[in-house]
Amino acid sequence: MSCGFNKTDLQNIVNIIEVCTKRGAFVAEELSGVGLLYDRLKKGLNIINQNTVTPSETTSETLSEECCKDGVCPISNCGT
Image (cartoon, rainbow, N blue to C red; front, side):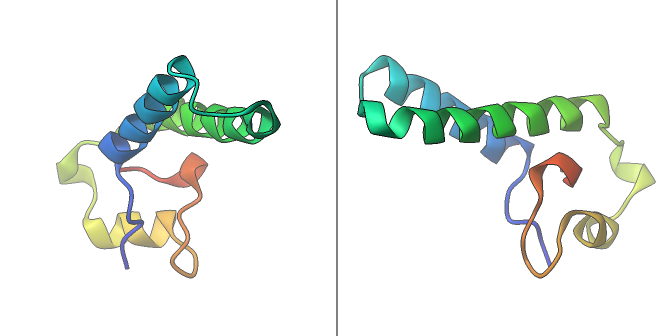
């Protein structure tokens, strides 16, 4: 089973949130939720960047076992 998101996907989501925020796409009531998600994504990306593994050191099956539990990828543990 795959995590479904990779490092590029997470970075793209962060970029989308940044653009939407600059364009005023969120109303005040949504800002705390968006901010919490943004912070979690950025934290996950930082962890991924610190723990980058070369492709020869792991397989996609190993990553899936480490990343996913019941098809859910906790961003802070995902290595791709």
